[in-house]
Length: 436
Image 1 (cartoon, rainbow, N blue to C red):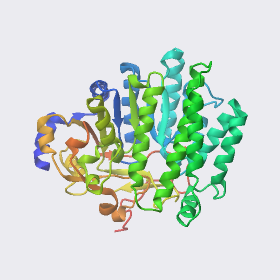
Image 2: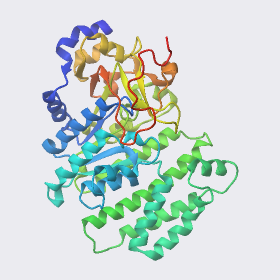
Image 3: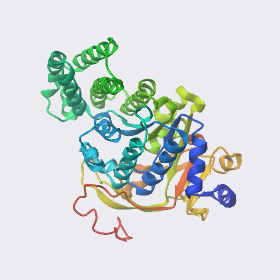
Image 4: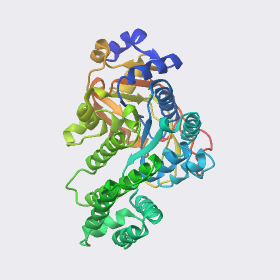
């Protein structure tokens, strides 16, 4: 199969340059939901290329929303900045809400540049053509509680008092949602009913007639999304210790429900929305071994709900460096990415002799040459090269997974805005991690 693709590469592997990015954006713009992935959470080349395509979708094709695999309250702070409604003096400050591990995933040089650009782009637009940026994830249990209370303190102190009474249930377990989940698993009463009651009240209030402008409508919607996130996050963390329902499925369903709510409620979002997340979330799960485990993902759910109105783009790399940790909550490191394994798409693309290219997976010859299943690498926020085959590879059928694939043969690590000891002390040695 590698030789088959190599034979096609001279005509089917299109160099990744400015003209190619224009072409990719133009093709993607025929859909109103564009999913743009990444093969790791710590590679600058993926983030940079994704941002360039997104800029074209915004400026040339009228897209009005960017959504991230990130927490709602932290990203909503960035949204207020890029739409000119915050006290943050610059993009660096606007991104400072991302304090939870892994901070580098959104607090990095590429994001700072993109957020600065989007703020400037919005300054040159009318109020009715602003481009927003929003988070889809559900990890921010306590951050969302804080955001709901802050909103209600400002608009309805009596409602804020009722919300504090309901959310006080979570305070018994400190700021760690895992502590809450473990306590419930051991027999403590859950906070589910209180969280649901607050969401019901916020939704009821949102439906009442009121004399507010578009900006207030966005704040109302944000408060409602935070309340819904609290409900889903409570269930998510509780499920971690019950083992009855896939927490992966709960998380991805929440992200898609948030995406649909945004497109329904936020002005302009339905005109065009870009989603930034990992390949494992955005490539259709039905084309991977996830299906055998009963797992779904954003890519599958969005295609099921929106059909041809979705265009998905994946990324891959053969080797290079990546910003990642060795364990959860461990310090960030700049690690060397091992060369792609034989029998993988990474190795197939490398062996074609083309270094930076993209392929249209709808082309019949390309789809035939790349039909699977082959291995595909996925590096999240943790990278363990010593167990890479079992930790970071899964089987996939690429032409069914994405509409287009961008391969960047040698890539470099994201540069975090908040460094850690040892991260910037030069490249890891070529023999890392074995020492051989």
